[in-house]
Image (cartoon, rainbow, N blue to C red; front, top):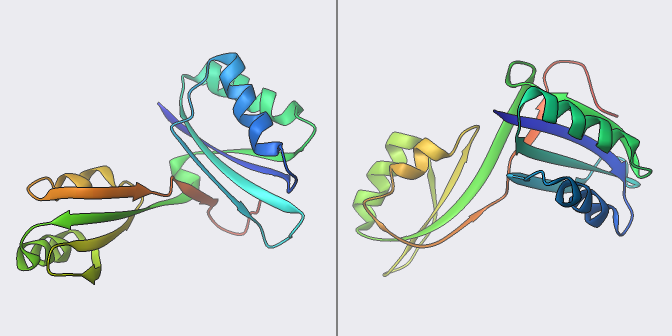
Length: 157
């Protein structure tokens, strides 16, 4: 089952490497990782998505909490959080056909040339939307990874 951790860490060099090393040493796979500075410049937020059973999920949470650079770890469930992922995809195909798929899926065309169309997809689950573009030649794709915030008034900071 996919699990999301929101991890508040000190904004210092080497923190990302140490956290990735923790996952590597324990044999845990990171499916998605997004890192950015928060509204407080000395802190960064990491959103880590992994596929783990309940026991492994709890073990990862405990290990993350023990790290010196970690300020706070919050496990986010889909019910209590809002998640999004951004995909930029460059396609080759008829512009009108691509535009029609964009209209159906909520994707946006952000650049058109004679040969390619670049599309932006933002959604909580981009997988289904991506399959809608299978009929076109995909030239290039880049994904941000999942970012997530807890719903309501609660905050990790």
